[in-house]
Image (cartoon, rainbow, N blue to C red; front, side, top):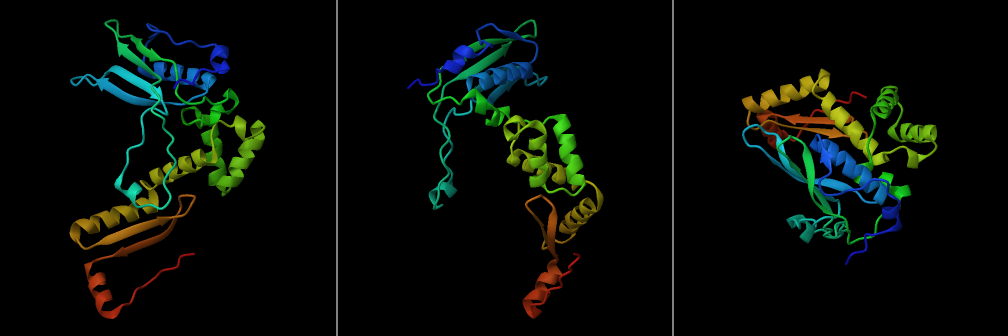
Length: 246
């Protein structure tokens, strides 16, 4: 089934052809991603063959995001509601190979898709097209540091550019960005000191356990820890000590 050809393909100003040359594999990815945006699909990096001795990329394959099928895992057999299958086994792809002059050439290209393409007006919502730019990240950080809730800051950013469709990222992208930022911040400050202390205790006491609970915004809401003596005492007395620092 080949249903990927659409009028958006005829309107695309970019073209993919064998022998097209790039000075870096990431430039080839960016070009293919820009092409896919104009056509109406998303892409992902399938594999990279690297030189074992020096680590540079010899060849790389970029595919349609609907390539292949999702691997079935054990949990899928027991859940009541299965995740929707989003892949269709699409064979559209773009393969580049390093040449003797260190440039990358396109050596294989499949244009046709086996699924409907997305309207270019909605292409910005596709996974490979969504990206938080440096200036946008700065604004998100500024609003977050000022205590503005993520939803309010997202709505504000959307109004600034005339609507969500012009932002280039979604609420989930912003949430993931803030989550990753807060995970990184755990490497510093009081929270990092707490985690370092817990990790040290684990080395000293194999029975030591701890857990951090985060809220939807990625902020620490609860911390639990117990060492071997605490666990033994709990089995005898059943008491706990809780600290409310609100």
